[in-house]
Length: 104
Image 1 (cartoon, rainbow, N blue to C red):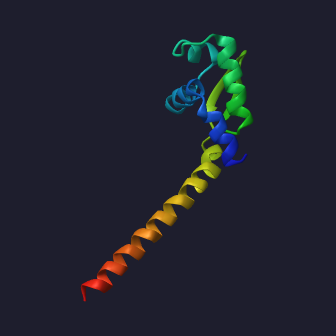
Image 2 (cartoon, one colour):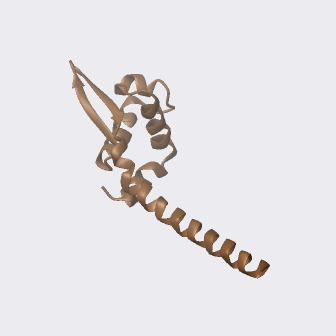
């Protein structure tokens, strides 16, 4: 998935809260819904969006479906953010070198 899909999926505050819950502890829809101000069907819809963005996985455990964070799903988003960080560090390095050159 693309970093843009991750951003769109995580832009919603409820989905972000759901994602954070899953990062702390995988679980079924019912257990997740207990911690959110939305209904179980709404949690299912949010999980669907997160899953389609590649941020969440699901596995069958008997009759329940257990959702968990798919950490690999954050790779493109992190690479995109790291690209900005690399630019910031390069700018910082250039500034330090320029100031060092002016000190002599």
